[in-house]
Length: 448
Ligand SMILES: *Cc1c(COP(=O)(O)O)cnc(C)c1O
Image (cartoon, rainbow, N blue to C red; front, side, top):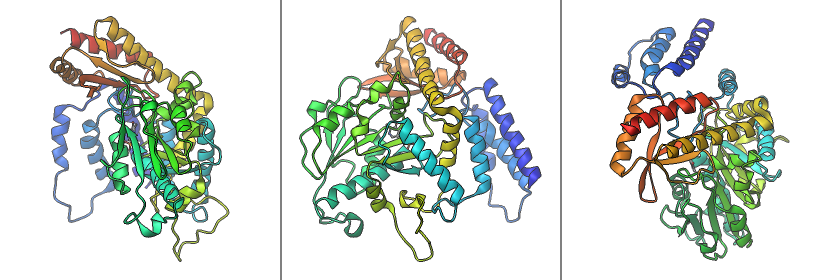
């Protein structure tokens, strides 16, 4: 056991150290070589050392360098070393973290991390929270609580009786709603298309005056951090217009909610604390390993009412928080340990600095690319930059060549009808030098 784990940690460290000098995208050859995994199920056992050797020699080269400092293709960071180390230790603990009574250490760490998160993000201290797999499931979890609350108010028990015959719930979203939120609505039986869509402005923000006045039962889904522009809905304004009992306001803040932790950017999330529920990701801007999402619900009892179950073999009675009372999952790994490690290591100022620094890198990209004569399509308020190199074909051709050249990796998008390259700066590891090298590579290709 010791030999296997030590050799594997050496492999992992070497992998991370080599990211600096390799192309961000895997080579075509490395991707072709993945076919070597495509073998028949072995009839007999294999030495674990050999299994890890296969994984490293065939798998490692076939990865995208997302853990490195020049991957800008998604709004996801790399893993802070302290969080990867915490992930290793918690992996060794192997705690099935549903119940405080059975797994005291991990349940306690999650409680502490939750309290810290509410403090850091300026959310109400009485909130209940759930450590889930990502913002998709965080939206699902928070909206399940919303569904419980707005129907309970009109005398309907959705957990017991389902949605057949229930009073209809009006669901409002912005035109720029993230597709994963629509998926969550579908999973909850609200329907992906059975929504009222509110028009947005040029940055993708919901126009609050365009929100139809809704009556109970209703759920208004807002967004902080548009996945293309980084723009944030005016949540405070939207909450003020919807102070009606039985109208629930939810915030999808997968990455944008972290602006609340940065004094110079907190204006973007003004008023979010007035909402009823929030979803965010830790694997995006907090730079912890996948999969790590967070749901917060102002009324912890409502979240519990929508999630908790009991079973005769499970002693759920506890004066401490049972994680499984708040999550869709029962058995789960203690992903909150990595969140705890990130916060314990960075502290309040470290989180603010991480958010501030990545946004400053984004502004740097925008400034230099614009100065070279290319168009920036969004107001760069957060960590997102949309670049046009001309028409759609030219832009897509430039993106393909930037990806192939390998210094950095950015993806494509279509923003309000215009094809663009999307740069998301979210990693703790990105330095000024990384940004300068990436800009040089991007401009060199664009000019050709
Ligand atoms: C990334 C993102 C999601 C989905 O998050 P996952 O962690 O991938 O499930 C939802 N909403 C917004 C605004 C996002 O940026």
